[in-house]
Image (tube, rainbow, N blue to C red):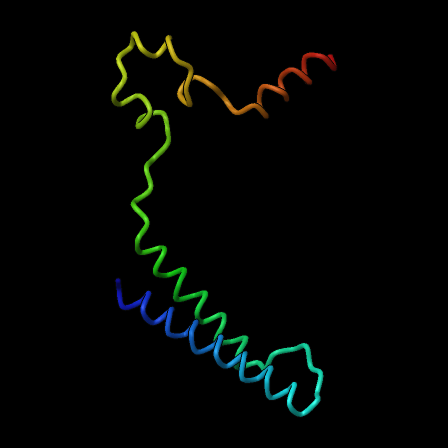
Length: 104
């Protein structure tokens, strides 16, 4: 477990405990305030940011998706057998071409 996850979990534990104490105090004094104090909201966003940073560190590197990377491990015989990103254009361009031909 990395230090960033530990920090995020500590922030989460503190903010949840603080919210419970705040709600109990409001209930004890008979006040009804649905909004949370700014400090608790800010602390919640700090938890979300730390957790997202931890997730971003654990993700693997992204793989390029283009013609070169798609055709690197294929032979010329295989290119005609299976349609892929290398051979298929975006559907929007096909629909635009069909619409252009039908309107003329």
